[in-house]
Length: 237
Image: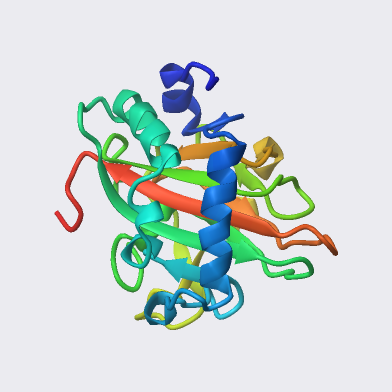
């Protein structure tokens, strides 16, 4: 049973960890199709774009298989998004898969999702809408600091957007990797919170919340993340 959602804590910290969003059967069903996409058994080549040219990333898996358009993770997350966004019908606006195999050491550097709102990046100082978007990051494997769990800086989401730069990939393409410039100076990283999860757990965060994942330093534990966003606005609005 999913724990009650602490809306006030989300507004204060900019993120929440959800120990169990979905159960083992849903994780297994999603992971089965996820792995088929990774193996090329389901053709996702049009949007199989490595993040920063280093990390396997499949954009919009919902375009290739119906399980990513309708599943219990989306249903449970939509219920949470209703509370966090304060709307009766939050809209799914984006989804992706990010895979870090054992020994894949590339990090996903500290960044804020709203930096991706414009091409090639959103200018520093832009006001981040606090109540229009949330992103869910669902673990399909047990995750910890060794294989790349999420880290957040609580309370850093209310200020204008920090200065970002293109850390990798093509500046005009979806593989671009954005990063906060000099995060040690821009953020108090001593306050950073790691969010280890069991498979089926999730995090949810505001588009302005700085977050980071390490590479996968393990030798035998994959890290499959299923990511999707809800908004108060329709896709493309």
